[in-house]
Amino acid sequence: MNWETIDNQAKEWVKEAGERIRSSFHKTLTIHTKSNPNDLVTEMDQEIEQFFVKKIKGSYPDHKIIGEEGFGDQLKTLEGIVWMIDPIDGTMNFVHQQRNFAISLAVYEGGMGKIGIIYDVVHDEMYHAISGKGAYINNQPIPALHERTVKESIIALNATWVIENPRIDYQLLSSLAKDARGTRSYGTAALELVYVATGRVDAYVSMRLSPWDYAAGAILVEELGGLVTNLRGEKLDFLSKDSVFAAKPGLHQEILDKYLKSGNW
Ligand code: IPD
Ligand code: CA
Ligand code: CA
Image (cartoon, protein in one colour):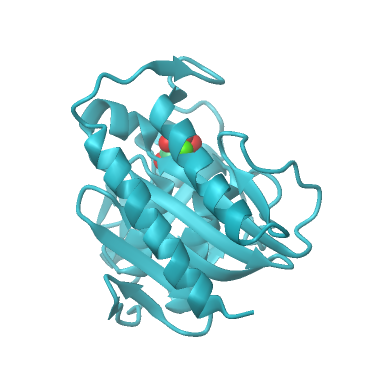
């Protein structure tokens, strides 16, 4: 398989999709809710996923697709080549802020990450990695990650889990938040993983994400020597929802040992 050809083609599609999203900014969008009143979806999420499905099926009819909005395939295994699409990661930000969202596209073969692309539409920043061939921002190599201790780290996590959460193991996250140099929450898993890959934050911790949220980001982080697991420190399987914990290796171990290990995640 020529991954570079697929990567170049996919980046062109992502650019075109980004242009469509930017040109939607002056339109009034119809907003619906999905699983709960805060789980938003717009016609742009659906239109962009359909755009990718059409492109992928047109060029690669035997490839499979897992997409958040349901226009892909219903898969029970990751055999063969599988594309994982989040047309807009950070829809709440897209709706409320018109920034802090991204397109996330990944290609896996037999469950192994091959291509990860995340496009920060508003900043026109294209992050991409081909497994074993480095990770790039707008085609410039991203430097290797440097280790940090918890005390020197900025941790990306969502404050709503740590504030007055009655569950005892969530207090482990409060301790982590208190011990770290700082915490941040951006509301987009794809960009938060990009921030781990680029060293803008040192770790990212999140509950219950779906494969399309982290499929591309995991490839970018791992390509730069970081680790991406669930909160129990186990490998992610990319077929089911899971918690996600990404960090550089030494910090990953320190956080697992001191904070996460005794939690029931
Ligand atoms: C959401 C974002 C958010 C995460 C949510 C995801 P969406 O994706 O990644 O950061 O906390 O769990 O569902 O719905 O905006 O694509
Ligand atoms: Ca998402
Ligand atoms: Ca989405």
